[in-house]
Length: 216
Image 1 (tube, rainbow, N blue to C red):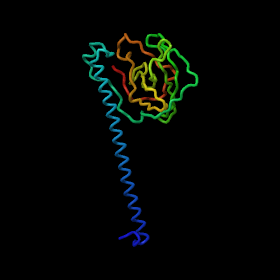
Image 2: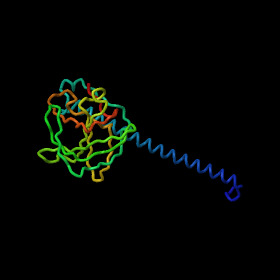
Image 3: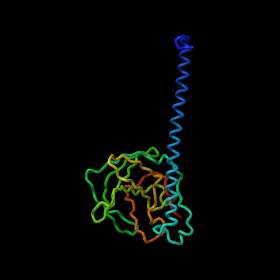
Image 4: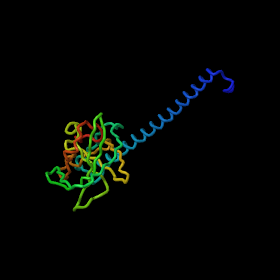
């Protein structure tokens, strides 16, 4: 039967059914794509963690002592959570200041206060300052350094804070992924390391239940 032969009401019902079925098809396609992307992301993070465990266990550059490496199984992490993967925009400071960042030994390291990120998490607004490491007055690399404290420190995570690194780009758009938050080497009990401490301005007043937990 052609559409022109249908009674008006039947035509409307027929059209509605077609639109409904089309909507389901599109929705399923989108859902499958989102699920595929999510699975790919989870796999990527899991593989990264496995590689880090292997480095900690086998590399001569591991932060663990030889005896600790013998008994080492794996690092402890929070479950991967997409909520902690946030799209952000870097806002660069008009005037770049050099600050003194305290270390685990009480010494100081110079760093360039480069810009900041505003983001929303757990229904509240937060801010993280991005720094660049300096050596002999010059920027060491093209990475943004984000050391931070949060409310898990000293309980589930290392008391000295955790770090994030971002490779600098030209469009200033980034993914702030706390699932990649990692401990400084000082967190593993080796007194030979000197690690920067997060400045107080990089205190996140929330639980960041993502990334690496404390070692022991």
